[in-house]
Length: 357
Image 1 (cartoon, rainbow, N blue to C red):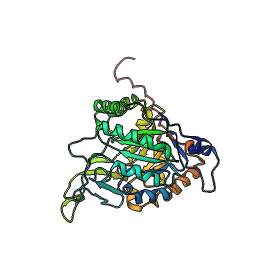
Image 2: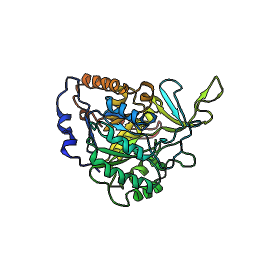
Image 3: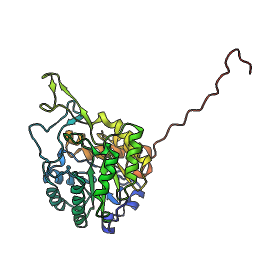
Image 4: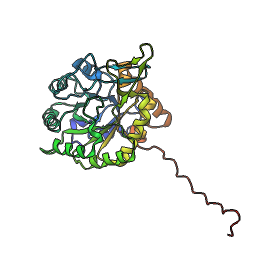
């Protein structure tokens, strides 16, 4: 489940998390599946992580890691129909699908980054294709000083004729079995999955059973966008994404759904599977909520699209302010420690009138 990183890469994260607040304030360092992040806040796979220039800007920012846009063999991007929009300046809706650039592009980009922080390589495709990409990533991982994680995107809601695999648990079990048919990833590579939003008990327990049953998974990212959203442009009386219609919704509107998924999955998954929170992380408060619900780190998407890479420094400053006000010096001081409400006490039923005691 966890990744063995050479000592030079590990950056003594456990001791970093135990130290007192630095001159910047409380420490935001975290460890996710053995990878040490200088900050628990970084980007998710999204359109602003497409090109080498995008990745270099993320690398130079305050983000704690650099995640690529999802690469999928054979995916064809259509500029005319695949787009994203922000109807209210806070939320986003998109029908983009995957990156227009191939997996090999990203494996060529990552060695050109600074190496000061881990990289998250997002991929999708058939089980056989993903298995081959995981093996290629395993060969690349030792050359990246900050370490490497591979996120298998099981959850894009915008691929015509291909519903998210994360909702079909029998198929998901077979898929993961095929991905790792050649054996487990090496200890220098973390492999995880990005899930769909779940809504019902049976979905949580079904997903957790499959994910717990795969011994090679190190993390789960929850959640991807909420599919089949529809925004209507009042001026044109047409869908905002026209000529497309429906798209995946992200931003503050999905924050509560994301928190529910993080909390439920953290409770159901084995401890060696880290949970990364994604959904509505547009402020220090939002990041704090994800961490309090059990996330080891948080990912930013919609707020990055609105603000650019400066969003990481802002969210981190706000998060440090909240931690300082509560006396927390490290993320571990409050991570996963949501205060559960006490169970209501049962009141004794009053005897029915007219009946003998």
